[in-house]
Length: 518
Ligand code: HEM
View 1 (cartoon, helix red, strand yellow):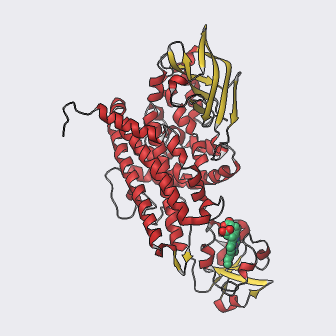
View 2: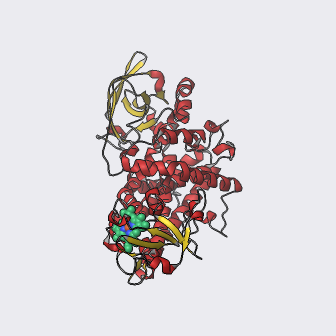
View 3: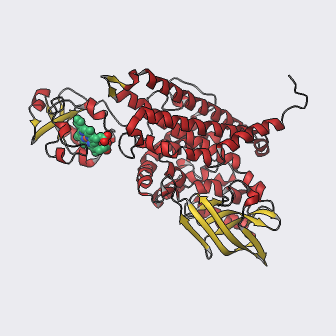
């Protein structure tokens, strides 16, 4: 704080004299706060300040056992500071934008001091710093706000995502990046690989605001690839530039109340009428549906299952579904009532919809796995810090063996997930699309199953470590509460956990040598 320089300095003895009602000072991390008038407004009550170990004393330890550091940084509380203690310096500092955490295991191995990795280059490092800075400065404040008030991602943030081409990068490497300036030109489009995309996704997950993680245009990530890969060039020209510029939004509309992954059970129908499709039906759990301009929609047609891009317009209506995460995700119930769409909006072949949908599943599952791991590592950091700063029975929480055992399990799970993810990502970088489809559907299914399970185990462990704070929406354990409430999303979205595990084993058995015997 620049004003701190101009502030007075006091001795401990001077501060100690201000220890009564109407004249009450405390010290937190070398800073002196005059709380004489604040005590009656304090959310934790006035009485806590009058105990002899607090009034006029250094209350650093007790403070950090009850509050997050961010409380002191809020302007209305920061101005309670009247000075500093002579000869002392603040020790508790928030990270600057882009700065890496020094808490062990709070960052992936390749970003930890003195560790090595075969996968990442200087390009990834530069990119990671730029992306972390951007997410801390631009995205995080919006994420925290929207997660709470339920509003969709703000257009100013979308505009900045688009300006840095983060919307385009989240679709992976490819021709859609050609000619674009990525994070201000830090990475060349032809250099951009799946590790760069992984870096973006980890930052998304680290936000710790699960509704907003999906509200951060997940609909485009899963709904635009069918347009990129299967639409006519006219349709692509009409749709893609505006979407990548953050001016239009897309949702993938497959699941229905009638049927989830059972495509044959879908009831939304598209019938031909001259040059048009006439579409009627309903869709449920459609991420970003409340604000989408286009719906990449699975329809029953005469030839089987067909994917059609439906623009919002006459006959299309959306209403929010209240789910257990924030409505900032824009989860919608969508109804199509005799919607007329040109036949040119068909994505892929009539009757060939399954191939269109399947083609994007690996990428979607890999993306959910990555954001989930970003969240799990952030939860791990919360737990490590809490176990360090919370004092129980006169010792830090980490002195309890049961807490150390839980931390060991969380660390082992996060590290295993990340290492497996990096190995799969390396395969993605080195395989053609056809090879990926052939070889990676099984491993990615198994990986996602593993990571969504570890996520829920970690949510449980973290809640036990935080106790009551882990089930409180605001304050100390707010990220734990959010994660505990929302970790099942990763086990459902992009393919239910058990289905994906099963897929992995079935794929393996397809490749079982005919002559394999014990
Ligand atoms: C400048 C100093 C302080 C400020 C600005 C402050 C502010 C707050 C705020 C905003 C809350 C609401 C919960 C949250 O957002 O975390 C809170 C809760 C609380 N505060 Fe403070 N506080 C201060 C000092 C203290 C001290 C020194 C103590 C104890 C001696 C204390 C005890 C509590 C308690 C017991 C709660 C309730 C915690 C809970 O619900 O878990 N506060 N305080």
